[in-house]
Length: 166
Image 1 (cartoon, rainbow, N blue to C red):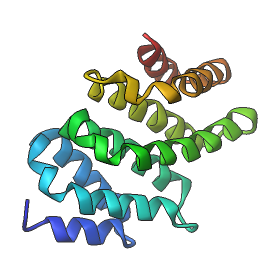
Image 2 (cartoon, one colour):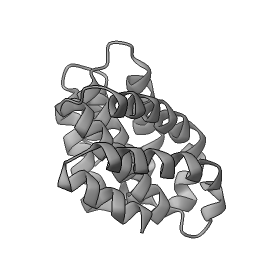
Image 3 (cartoon, rainbow, N blue to C red):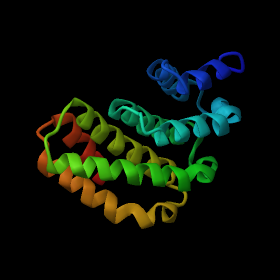
Image 4 (tube, rainbow, N blue to C red):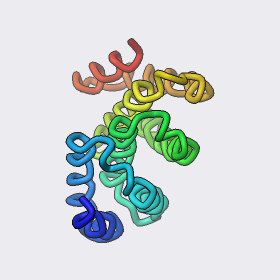
């Protein structure tokens, strides 16, 4: 991991964004807490990339999804130090999701809806030890999920949204 880590962080900050995020997602699923020594810099790179005005909506979905994958990999207690920043990212993504619910919806918007729901599912699972950390966001999450369910005809999104509620 220590040998590929600098390449992955550089990839998140470059035109190789999608490939780097894909590898990081796979690593989160397979190495779990072994990714922890690298999380501060990975999270910083993701948060910086999210704030980039040139960011494509497809990349936004990748970032949102990976933030949830990292929470699952390292667990809520450790993830707590990133929570404030992640909640800001999810709030910004929620605004985009809600705009898409009210307008035309394309593939990137569908991907962002799915990623947003997946990220929240990961956070709720990871913070089972202290759900009060997420309590301030619950009403917004549920309102958004209901709006998405009412708007979409995509079975996968509906299924994931129902799992989040349940």
